[in-house]
Length: 316
Image (cartoon, rainbow, N blue to C red; front, side, top):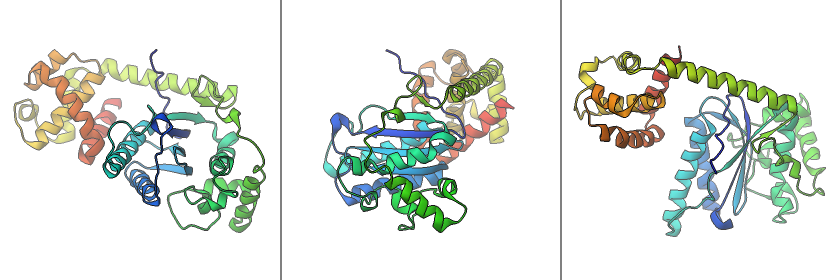
């Protein structure tokens, strides 16, 4: 069965959940928790997003993220890959640490933001790890209470729900969370439309409309993007003439530019043979370089910025 494509919209609120493979432990020590939070903070600086809540349970984790520009999938891939490498190296493990791909639910902000923050921060209580949410060290709850000075969690938008005065808002937030201590897990926070969206029918319709607009925009862009257009944009982005990079040159700048062209051209439906002829490489090299380029786009800031500039130029 084919996987459903991810719904990724700028300004969207996402409840992200990922579990250990075969229900195995993800975090075994305080050092593990701190390493994950450090990697999360690094991603937040590199690919900005708002983080409203998190909870790192022994065998699964929750994040509540508002997407700004970079796709959630890109953030999570980099984050989970980096942590998996650390974990497997430390514990001399091989194979997958996480169970398949993460679950990301697009949520209606005005109806569910505060409710989801509470739900996530109460996970350790419902799992009977602690009696009170403030006793669990690995969630964003302590930041909301003002007991932890971390800047990782963006508390202000949520606290504004509880009042303009910060001290009073913190008190009301604490009361709001504690009021649900006796409640069981809330399955309605998982029972989502089409398995991916949490919100009213009106919200679902709005999301579908926005997805349609984005798809139309991509389709229009794709129809325009022939090899000639992409090469022209590459020239503008790099300041180089195509006669310089459409060669067998092994210079780092030339290789990076060709890899960026390959990614965008194949996304636009250009045939590998046609592209290979223009770039002066073998057709078999196009596919090989595409995979290398995708990896580089995750680790190289210059590559990421080049792709961003070229895509922006193509859309305009």
